[in-house]
Image 1 (cartoon, rainbow, N blue to C red):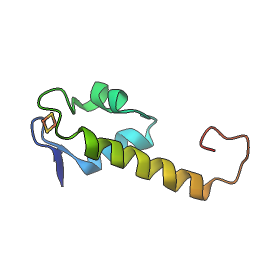
Image 2 (cartoon, helix red, strand yellow):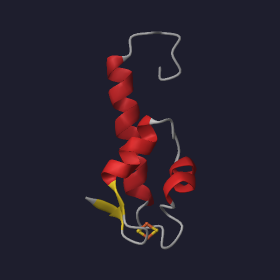
Image 3 (cartoon, helix red, strand yellow):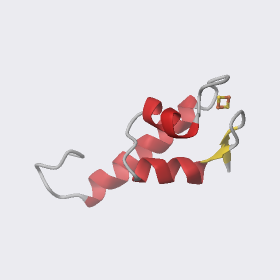
Length: 68
Ligand code: FES
């Protein structure tokens, strides 16, 4: 599904960048250009970042991990 219409960026591309270490809207923007035009995609980018963080917290049991 296309998330950023202006840059034709899909949720799959955003998930890939986030799984490779992007942790903020600005980091995703630097990689894919999302939010550089109209900015309407920023909320959905944030949600994808948060979903990834939640999934990591659920699967990570280490108390000293950065995801905690
Ligand atoms: S929809 Fe992403 S910048 Fe316009």
